[in-house]
Image (cartoon, rainbow, N blue to C red; front, side, top):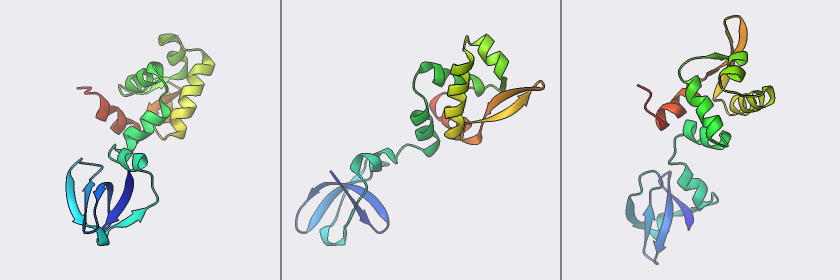
Length: 139
C-alpha cells in the first residue's frame, strides 16, 4: 500500500485507475474517491502513516513500555508521585530495574524526576498523564 497526499492530507492508496483513486484516511478509516492526477506520492511508509491515527502520547507509551511491569508502573504513577525507595519496596523492584524503567520513561517524556518527602522520586509528565488516561479510566 502506498501513501499519497491531496490538499495537505495524507491517505493510504487502496486502488487506482487512470482517472480516480480510492483512498483511506488513516485516522478515521473512511474511504473516498479522489482524482488520480491530483494525488502526490509520499515517501512515508503505509504502516507509519497508519500509526499516525494513534495520539502521540499513547505512541510514546507503547514504544517505551516493554511489558506489564512498566505499564503497571505508569498506571501507579498516575495516582501521584512515588519516591524511588518506595518504588523498590512497594513494587518489589531492584534498583537497576527501577532506574532502567524510569530512564526509558524519562527519555520518552512520560515521567520526570521530582522530590517526594525529601527523597528523589518520579511523577508522570503531562504526556504521561495523557497516555495513561487514554488507555485506562482512572476515575
